[in-house]
Length: 388
Length: 177
Image (tube, rainbow over all chains, first blue to last red; front, side, top):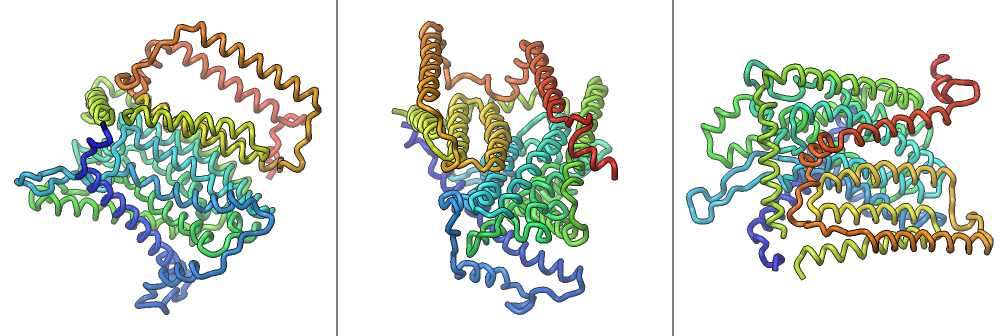
């Protein structure tokens, strides 16, 4: 009976990790709403929220409470089940992605005692981690589409159709820009991708993928903006054309879910961008720090490094939103199909050519590829053995 | 019953039930949602067979892209149970007969085919590294030919989508500006 063979300690460890990550992303998203208003206020020479608590720090709580206590209205002519399903799906897909991200290096708990165990700061290290992220992202559009359609409102329907076509168009360029990156890393596991970017400087060049794939990074970043429906790509909810867009008919906490899911998505995609292109939890001189402090503290420092990158990325998202005007819809499609996809294809071809050209003298990261595949296979087999 | 067969039965019931839901529900949007759930169940089967790559690609391509387009078209056409045209008796009968004949043929084909039981627990073919090696070593020609097929389908779609005047519908307007 396998049901009885499950390692209880592992179960507890993962349960704690999942709750911490979930609470963490909810907390960050909560304060991202506050930060967004503050950033907007500073950029427009206003004060921003400053009534609830010092610097308005309790404002997100007040907003959440307000949304909970509002009257909930479900339109008479809506498709009730799908109307309720919409915000649930939006929230679900927003929180699912964080499962495969490595938040920090492994560390040993209770070192030297009988109960010694290695704790991994990643919920699931699946060998196709980045594809999992991609799969969840491609499902994310259903929340918007179904919600908009079920509202039985013309503005909502138009908005959800915009969201769908925008998401599909930009997923293509995003995927192709990722392929170039994956050709260099030779692995789809996010943990491997992070470990290959160890430290900051190695062998006379930067280890972070941003410096190896700058064009790929910019394409990925633009596509991330479009996938998040954030300005300058917030066509699905542009007030001047569609009133409120797909959440026009939503009230109370259902509206809150939609708004909140956007901020969770922003947090998670910032974490993904940091992981893929900015070295994840790696930071300069990390080897020296690792030698100086105990494992647990080092792991915390790594988590701190990742969170710093994430916060910088979120702030960058906000600066863009409050400085750039919105695209027109035909410009958006033209940018996606006629600029980003060809650029991403060229980037992929050049990367492939360079890898082929330098194969006679492989860099350590490329030389390892076959070995890594073998390790992957063994790991997968071991994992599979555990399941069966 | 080990966990493998429990999962197998749960996923199978889910797949068959949702597939029935696709053809039985009156509202096209519900049909699409059932079809998405069917794809999820099939992805689950892939994972049981240790083919994580196939599972996730099935989800990205079918559930994430193609079904979004389906939903898109259905929303644009605004189909629902009220306005759905009711087919005549003869058409329904013809549909039942032709569907039944197809089912018979499939049954006959499956019965005579020497079905090889897959050792689900030991195979590693669905892992991305192995799959890539097999595709690009043993099956490189069919693989490349099918990509040409996709390309020709894409070109065909562009040609059909073209207006009589000779230029693409949306693009011409943008170019003039």
